[in-house]
Image (cartoon, rainbow over all chains, first blue to last red; front, side, top):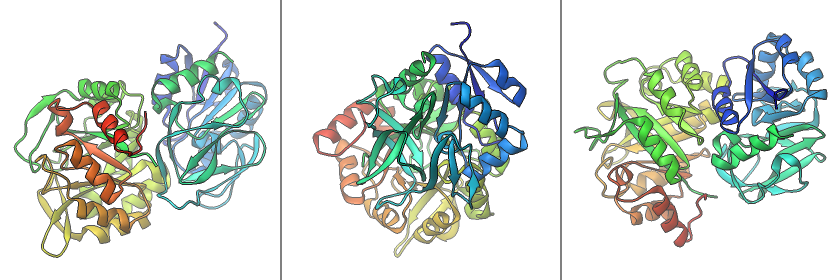
Length: 201
Length: 251
């Protein structure tokens, strides 16, 4: 598939882009790291990584003048947000104050309130609520989570995950827009399989 | 809750070494080879600690770290000699998912924990504690268990949580490398005094030691080094044993 280039958004100092690039390549994909808005035109799919805070991520995107171009690109290109990258697909975030997100998924991002240690760190399973091509064949797999905030929404939920009796949204889907709270790039072969599914979309 | 099984690599470049009481080093192998080996055995995470970077005021070896990260598709924590926000940033760009800080934060500038947490997110900032037991309390040590800090371990654990650390990596100067069991009282004290995950290292000598620690102190993770380095068991053996004893672990 020659016209299947995956663009990985590189924003600011808070990116885990190298491990994601490595995992997509292991899954057989071609990755182009995107440093500016012009380059968005040269890719077929988009992956939004993210390590850091909601506020920091949005201000980095703003600094690079990426918010509007990215919002537009997401509307036509298959997109996968990972961890914080999924969170910023939401309307609004509440980490270090209130911040507008990319508004691709009608949701808010709030601190996890749970009777257990936070951040939620470690391997956990996903209960698929609404099956989709991205999660195809991954029903019983373990994925790695590392987060203190969760996406709160009532539509577009693809899977839930149970942490100490608290169910939170572990993945979302709206048409060709996907978000996963876990880190496929840190989830062994199951994660590589997820990237294969994304490549084949 | 699944207890994480984490492999600890103590590195004195270019080798992974195994100190006894943080001293008397034995060479085990190269970090890149061992990381790969334990990944294939089913480790949930790898924690790479440059044990002499702070002590000898040496530069962090970013190339070595990147090479090791390239073999892993599981979380990779890195510590040793971290002093600046730039160090954090460079380590994340070298493939680290979390960065551990000890010496500089407890001896010089605890504020760096707040700064790092705000920039990189709480979950990416680990504080490494090297505890030593005294009659009435535990004290934080630094520079690979050599230098006293005068700081109480439990007080420090609470403080770093408030400052935004996302995890505590708890080592014990007295039990590290001896393979005679963990200091389970220390582990329980720290686990119960904070609401962030605590990973407990130092002391696994048998499968039973690991089970005892998990049942008594309920840490989020257990870090293992010697037991694996000497090929006594594989990560798979450890997980199977825990599963058979009704302790939840990942696949």
